[in-house]
Amino acid sequence: MNAPDVKAPEFSDLRAYLEQQEKKSLLRFLTCGSVDDGKSTLIGRLLYDSMLIFDDHLAALAKDSKKHGTTGEDIDLALLVDGLEAERQQGITIDVAYRFFATDKRKFIVADTPGHEQYTRNMATGASNSELAVILIDARKGVLTQTRRHAYIVSLLGIKHVVLAVNKIDLVEFSQNVFDKIVADFKKFAAKLSFEELVPIPMSARYGDNVISNSEKTPWYKGPSLISHLETVDVEADLASQPFRMPVQWVNRPNLDFRGFTGTIVGGTVKPGDTLAVAKSGRTSKVTRIVTYDGDRQEAVAGEAITICLADEVDISRGDVLAGADARPQVTDQFAAHILWMAEEELLPHRQYLIKTGAQTVPAQITQLKHKVDVNTLEHAAGRTLQLNEVGYCNVSTSVPIAFDPYAENRDMGAFIIIDRFTNGTVGAGMIDFGLRRATNVHWQAMDVNAEARAAQLGQKPAVLWFTGLSGSGKSTIANLVEKRLFALGHHTYSLDGDNVRHGLNRDLGFTDADRVENIRRVAETSKLFVDAGLIVLVSFISPFRSERRLARELLKQDEFVEIFVDTPLEVCESRDPKGLYKRARAGEIKNFTGIDSPYERPENPELTLKTESTNLEELAESVVQHLRAQGRIP
Image (cartoon, rainbow, N blue to C red; front, side):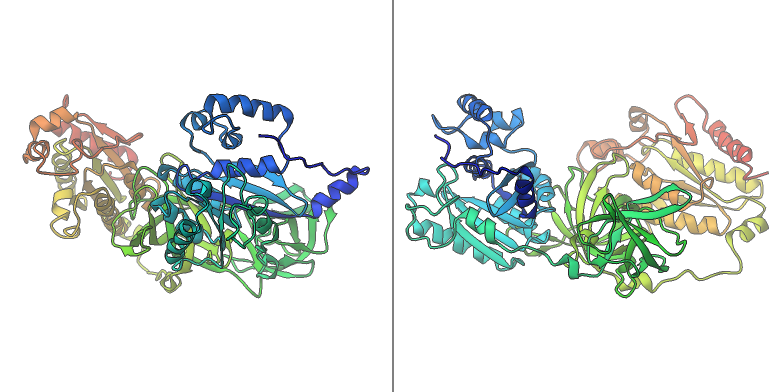
């Protein structure tokens, strides 16, 4: 395969050449589709035909093609993009690969995304920054499940312009009938999606048919080549005409004489003299300066990074959003959103996660999974949790209000990621649909008799004694002994036991991970109410997950939660088996039983650890009472 005979433009003035490049528009697009549809080969073809491969790279590519290639004696252009050794050995794309190329008319950044279902999260990452998607289909295979999945995610992430590249058309003898059938099948599915433009193109990425120029082998095709369409498609989102939005990334305070707020504008324009509002607090002030690296500006538009100086001393910190005072974003702590789940561990409603939107990270939980989306039919299905790569429509609650615009109106203001609080890994991505009105209709009612007054009347400091451990560890027995001692001493207590609560408050819950999370959430909220009443609350629950025990702790004041780990080995608990549960679990009669087929996450830093193997239960109960005395909770 010889490189095309294209002469690079000659410029005597390098500055003029750079200025010409700077004036070219930039298109960000991605390639996606099922495995082995030719995504990497297509990008390799675009790079090759754009003369962006140096001679030494071409020589190395020829060598690698003999070792890893799949195209016989020809150069395997896919290897230009499949840079990881694992990708080359398997012949697949694993990570998102970004490449730059340019033509005389436009500059391009293309993301090559993986086709395997297990790497759908990588594909979503590439789509989140793209303005156009090239969805490839192998002409021999037609529309596959992964094709539909990627098309749906492309639509979900707000991409309006799509090229349907029916690749490997050479392997079906350039058949128009095959092409027309695939296009019809895809359009039938895509009719339910929100694409503004769908351009089908028959092509052979390997041989270049209809990639750079129209091919003589498809005389029946009258549309544009891929590159001519990419050069002319209008994808400019008119962000400048939208209301002004700037998430604050940094408070710039180099000295006592300067205070500015730095960030990237994600919508609208701003000028000195404009009145801006801090979205959450509602405080307003006028812009006095717009500062950039190149000096002060008289105007700044969407996409530019700037520092704004205000006329007044307004309380603003990282994560706040500056907005036009006459067109402010919504502010709420509850909203509806589509969520793409990206983790092996399932999403559990009511589990505490972190949500990052813009520069702000806040605790949050998914309060309700309203439905899941079947990517094959786009129909809604009931579900309690989301598994890896599933999409659901959910209600989300945050610990503090956030400022947002619906994702359909502003991708930057309406997007968020979900972070696991324990691993700090990204587990999901979300697109906000609308705020739930009830979030702004509920306010705290002030009470004259407060928690401190109730505790003072009872002569004790309230607390939650949270006993956690395996079934049969002795939690309930020790908690009962502790309560008897406190009661005898004249203290006011209440016990919440796992089995007892499931006869009433939590009788509607089972033992799946999702139900266990909800079980603990309800008990934690109930415990908080008893603490507010001034009581010492004894909670005896297996509570197997650290995240839910952390949720219970965070509902209370710093010193009001006492985690007590009843540390008894599984074999000891199983030998006791006071209710015969382990025997039934081993026989398969009880599913999701902690310690057998459901995990128990040991506390990392409990206030007390009680080992029932070596110590008398009466002595352990007394150690809990002594701990309360040492804390000053009881006299």
